[in-house]
Image (cartoon, rainbow, N blue to C red; front, side):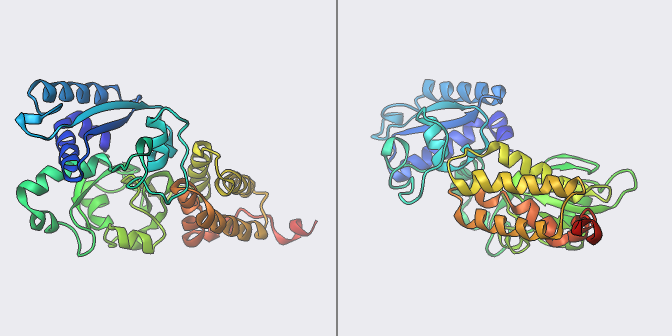
Amino acid sequence: MDRSILEGDPHAVIEGMMIAAYAIGATAGWFYVRAEYPLAVERLQKAIQACKKNRLLGNNIMGTDFSFNVDIRLGAGAFVCGEETALIHSIEGARGTPRPRPPYPVNKGLWDKPSCVNNVETLANVSKILLKGADWFASFGTETSKGTKVFALTGQVEHSGLIEVPMGTTINEIVNEIGGGVPQGKTLKAVQSGGPSGGVIPAKYMNMPVCYEELKKIGSIMGSGGLIVIDDSSDMVALAKFYLDFTVDESCGKCAPCRIGGKQMLTLLDKINRGRGKKKDLEQLKQIAFAMQKASLCGLGQTAPNPVLSTLKFYEEEYTNKLLDGKTEEK
């Protein structure tokens, strides 16, 4: 979603960053973009050059006392660098690992200076809110989740792609009205929200509004704005293993709960998926997940167990069906 904004309207993000800089008294800003997105980088560079040429960036902008310069830093696609302190370390040229907070970046951020870290979608909204007013923006969404949200709708759905909907739009509207429903005569089993660290939402919650509060209640997150549609042919244990395998691989390894706990959970999941698991393994999965949620240093480790916990909660029979029977277990 962020890549499409940078490719399609980089000026909106630059303007949002400039407004934020003016508000807090900052004189320098950085765009942190994955090197795997060359078109986004190219268009961002062109937009920055155009702004400098027209004296909208640089020293004494438009003859005022306000000076602001921006630069681009390329990331290597590390998932953990979505965490703000890991991102800051990466911009500085260090290894992208999180640090304990406090101190928060607003007090001690980039090169130990107070820093304001925001994502692309947030900054792209700023100028529109100033032009049309806060009431206009708040007219979209729910009482506590205002505005709109861009989602990457994908998976087993007829029409995949990027969509922008008001907060509070139901899963049914997104999957069936916008996405065209599940293809090939199959039925909806679940929707997974929030990217690799999100949880699954069973089909029985189709009329649930998609907003921060409702997703949290059900054990999922808004995350990176991914919505993956899952049909009735999917194996939920294998699905949980697939996502956990990704987060284990992307862990920076700095803290033990994430580094060790994630690997232990993955080993147990693999054992269960191969039909070699025992009932006690399910309890152990929950215990390790709880420890990771409470003790991990950053959001990656804290949310990595979500796919496992949510599939265990709603599809436990798929786990128990793969366990060794009592007789085999006794042997």
